[in-house]
Amino acid sequence: MRKKWVILVIVLGLCLGDTVVMDRNVQTQEKAEQSGVPTDVGKLQAKIEELIKQLGDDDWRTREKAQEELIKIGKPIIHPLIDTIDSTKDPEVKNRSMTILSQLEVEITDEEIALLEKRVEKSKDVNKDILWQALGKWLGTPINGLQLTIKSDKKVYSFRPGEKITIEVRFRNVGKENIYICKHFKWAPYSYEITGPEGSVKIETVNSDMEAPPPLTKDDFILLNAGESHVIKTFGDFQERSNEIVLYAADSPSRTTIWYLCKTGKYQIKMKYQNAHEGKKFGLRTWIGQVISNTIIFEIQESIFDIKEFMNKNWARVGPKIKSSDEAVAWVKNQKCTCGGIFDIILAPTVIRSKNSEKYYKIIAQCEKCDNEIHFFLCEQSGKE
Image: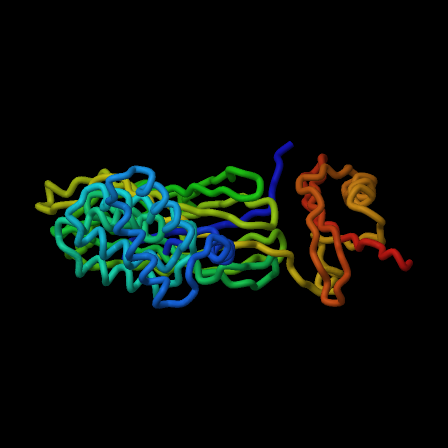
């Protein structure tokens, strides 16, 4: 019997046409305050300068302590460390500054990302690659001059019909030479790495049009000059029946990547793009290799709904009030499909809330006889009843 989960579907037909890290700003700030870090801007700046200087101290214990203190301070150290990497001649200070940046667990905004990019562009040529690498967790680490950055339009979504979502995919040439990238992204292998409340998540990729890759020509490549970016926006919404999210690229919806996300909670997503198509026979310098994006994090929360929305749906059933999730499961197992078959539960109870704050258990079950899928909604009985 095949099993299903609540599905998040991303369709990246992707004709080729930041990093958000786990939100721990508050925790970092609390740690900073507890460690005696100055909250006054002037004093904090002086403290950071002193600690950065100590990264090159003769005593390794002083260097280690300074590194630990800088990590505790968090976001305010990012730009001073970039300046340090770009200006210092001390390899110890440079390496420790890079290590500190890679270990920071703070969230930065799109505006802050843009400022970081501008700052890197102004840096010395000899340090640009080093800086891109140090900022890889927010921007994606460049490989052979190509940087891949992905971004979601929101940090919180809910399992609710019509909920909109947009994922932006950006390719940027951060190298010194112009490069060509295969224009038909759906024929260049790409994949996702997703982790969530249940750990690694199953991913499937399907070409809905079932086309075979056509012979490539010069017109199948797009030029990225040094410093240029190319952005693809994929967009979609949650589907009514199974809480799927279907995203379409602006150009072509033919390639479908299905993300099976089975619970509410936080999900971390990275994208990998690789290209092996050589353009030598066309006289082009194509980018060859594999590049991995930054990690984006978003949360899927309980949906707030009107139970009346499901009353007349042939794929939904509203059950009686129950006392617990176990009782809800037992009730569903005793139900019969229209064909007379019994139901096999394929998604354990998920808590959702109605507009009047009632707590419902949503259970997805599948008929063992005809494979018909039904979504059951059972309200938890309050203690007053």
